[in-house]
Image (tube, rainbow, N blue to C red; front, side, top):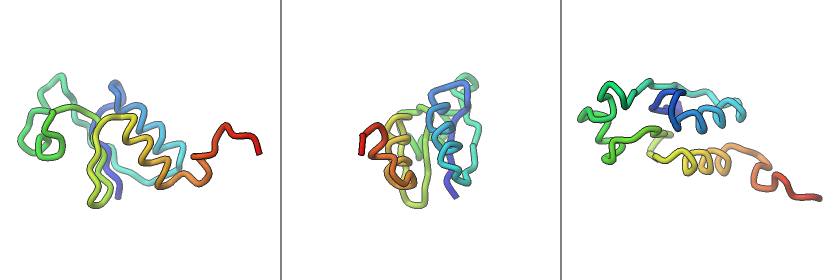
Length: 87
């Protein structure tokens, strides 16, 4: 199952929205930067920069909200690459 680390009141909002729009099953793991959650040893193994969001999809680990959203669109969004193009 896809896991997204972060809280909606952060840049994690973008990939959370994308996951919902694509109708994908996922687990939102609430990690908050304000309480030091992004500085734990466990979290830093996912993102050594200590920032949210982080997406884990099998062996793929990504951070940066726009990179995550692009990955989700390309992997799971049928026809998303052609959005906005006239046919």
